[in-house]
Length: 446
Image 1: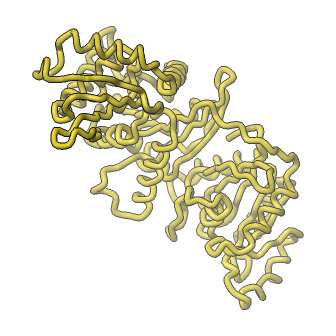
Image 2: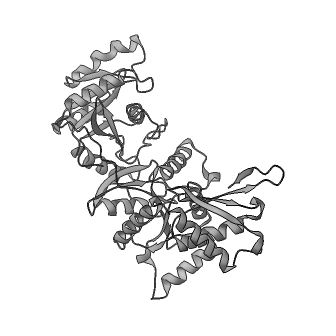
Image 3: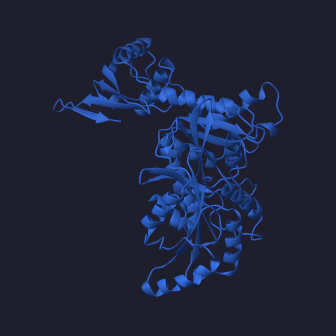
């Protein structure tokens, strides 16, 4: 979360509609919504602008979790710490009237001495509006009837939030780098996020699947702003049997698509699993730079040969791992966290650079002269090549016959260009455009 922007936190009991209200305010479905109580476990935040004023809105877990699960105390502790950093509180209640815990929650919020808006949710009809008088006994002056689902009075709520903000920030600094932390459940993603942030920002537990939403946080590293996205663990699709798991998976894929660099976290004590391969496939499909981080390296018995042997086994099981940086880390002990971030910046810099056309064609000419093109030799002609995009670096080859450029041939040029143009660690795209023998027109092939 950006320390430069004021924070507005939505608090309330479980299942009063906090996540629905959050999504209505940000005009997106970022927070998972389901009728299952206690679904939100982490604090989910998003930066929005209303009337040219920027602020962070946060969806917090239901504060009546006490004793309901092994994670309850950790979740509540994280929520309380977050509230202490807030500038405005939105206390969400629901029609027809306050319940017993609402009075306890009102006292908690009142003691914080922060500007507070009481929002009464599920005001879907004129009959329900008659219940508004039931909420004035809580003693708050700012009370707004809303329907998060139908977006009733959302604009009024935003107006009131902006009015209560202690500081009006009108500019949002885009992060210099967005990193998504991806991995299967219990690989250490939330621990890594906490190591980056320097405090317990995300709930950490040995219970797999603790993180269900994608959690964004921002921090500064060597004067650069980094946004970290801690994603829900991707499980095998065959095991996604509930709405919760489906939406967690969907959010993770969305997080991959909006990041600049993906860190794929693998549990060193477990090794590469089929699920890890599926996760890598999702990152590769999105054409994102990847760092493979072998986490929990502190728990592995090792000598000076161990890491290289581990890498060799990893590449043997999943040959595409050879294309990307592989770094051993301990999120728990903060070992090689700096190296992760430095590598991420390096990959992003490489991904955004352009190769001038003369240099590209000279390199391709040299590759052809070496004579290692798979099984085709002189049949292949590349007349001309040009870079057509960055992030990922994308190239178009104009060739004599597109049919000659099978997957293994394109793969050869991908690897060779990465080495020759200092693009190691990046996915690259090569489009083939050849002549059609029938009419002489060029047809693209990717």
